[in-house]
Image (cartoon, rainbow, N blue to C red; front, side):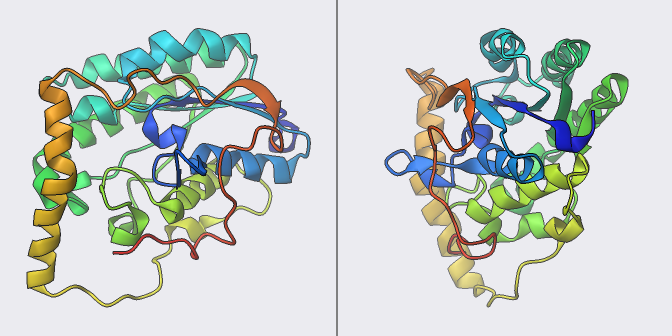
Amino acid sequence: MPSTEYRRYVALGDSQTEGLGDGDDTAGLRGFADRFAGHLEAARPGLHYANLAVRGRLAGQVRAGQLEAALALRPDIATVVAGVNDVLRPRFDAAEVAGHVEAMFAALTAAGTHVATVTFPDLGRVVPLARPLAPRLAELNDRIRDAAARHGVTVAETALPEAVADPRMWTTDRLHASAVGHERIAAALAHAVGLPGSDDSWTHPLPPRTAPTPGAAVAAELRWAAAFLGPWLGRRLRGRSSGDGRTAKRPDLLPLTAGSTGPETTGPETTAAAP
């Protein structure tokens, strides 16, 4: 289907797709899926868009809780982004996680949907304490690429550009993209599916910034561990998820301008989180 003919877009996933890091629960979340919907609307006005993502969901939970609903909406295009929450769990089976993702690829493409996905950056480039996760992420990315090739799924290689290691691409929790990061992901998807006017500018570095001193960097790591790592570990030990009790923010296919889910921004480089 030509890119200008996409009329129905459905997003499946976890917190990144829901939009954490781009807005808040009071003012509303935007995120890469909302922003990608904006790119689709610009190419073909009249887009209808649904976002089924819920924060904290594992890949198997995304499949179990969102795939059937997505198929019922008969999308022309869908994004499937899941697996990072699995990577962060003590017990991680890359084949099992990728199997859930591939099952979603298979079901959606068999229904005639153009599916797009992304690869995941090495979190150790942003959070030094996460460096041991690099082999897990690399294996998951390879399996996602292989599954995508088998089903004709478009892959936006968001894991690769050096710019992803820039702190301004991430929120202070360092696990979710900032508004700038979400805009870059949306632009990467637009480029990958060949939308008119898209290009590789999403891979370009952000403007130069002053690097923190070694002491400031160490202090930032300690603040991060206290503010974010500790509470996250606490939830894991209690068997709780940030998505407990939550439902999809936009479960129905609506015109993009209806049921707005987040704040507008003036451009991809104007809302960067503080380093």
